[in-house]
Length: 382
Image (cartoon, rainbow, N blue to C red; front, side, top):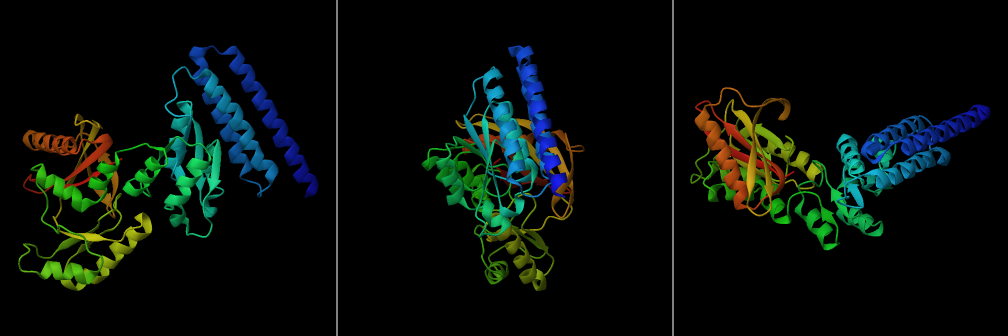
């Protein structure tokens, strides 16, 4: 076994040296116009080493190999990238495939990239796709580690990170995270803090929809922390709502923290399921209640805003085919919508985001009932 390990080390080391030498010769033969292709090739070979290193146990020799490849790649990207870099160092504050995509995009823009990972994720791909990677607190659960705002901000400050991209889920819609980064002098790649405060909390988003004269589904104006609070509100004769209802996480997203409540007897169990799911995923278990719309169509409008009130839409898509409130198929454009309904949805989406001076890409989501009436549901500020 010892001989095999020694042979493996020499084999991988010699392979790495040979591949890096090949790429240096490629770069020397490549002009500026072809620089991106050369850099992309190095990135692929760097990944080749990363993936094969994972098959061995946690040996320091193997974990130094990706760093060597990353240095060559970073210097090549800096020398041959023809456009100015938006940031010198970019962190992906997420995990898995979205973190990998962020790191790849940062690399293509010529940025040095930084990743973070929990103890349980120490062998996952996104750690090895970054030029630098830092382990989060091992004292927290795997999800809680990625929600640890003070630790992430401290890592940014200590390591010269200029910008953080949050991806989706986790801290992507957390206004406190964006505010903490800005106070530390780090750019949050996403909407403004005010945008996140408004749209990250679905109850405040509904208030803006009312202000913008956008139709909404009948529901609670405030959030509830316990099933008894929700039950008291539903049974209040002054509230025009009856069962079935739907319980939704106030700070949720991606279909998490949602439960249909057919009768009063189901309220406590469904509320707790929705609240616990939201608490584990987003760090906030508050929920609100809405009237359940039977067999609706789920229509989304993709928008872009410049932060000064100028907003455009990029048309619509139908996301009605879902499983457990998770979209399975998206069809663009949505079929079977009347021209009048489609235009009303476009106008309402743009008017809402313009009123809040939205910055960044954002998705405005609507439900359309059997009669063609549309209702605002939420905005995904990411």
